[in-house]
Amino acid sequence: MIRKLTSGEYRLYSRKKDPKTGKRRNLGTFSSRDKAEAHERFEGLRGLLA
Image 1 (cartoon, rainbow, N blue to C red):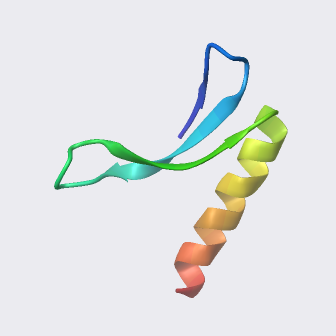
Image 2: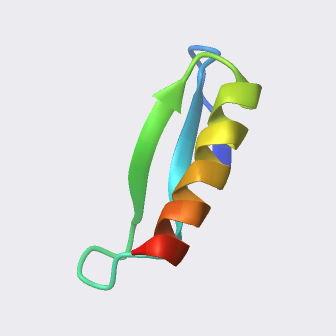
Image 3: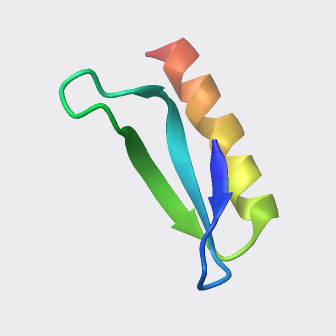
């Protein structure tokens, strides 16, 4: 899940909430939405390979 921050950057969060904290894990902050989407695809593939 990608959200735009007030600074203009984009932050990538995990799709699942952490059961202990009830919040989504931060997977990185990116300067553009394109970069965030590319990293989101990478994280998805990494999950399949792990």
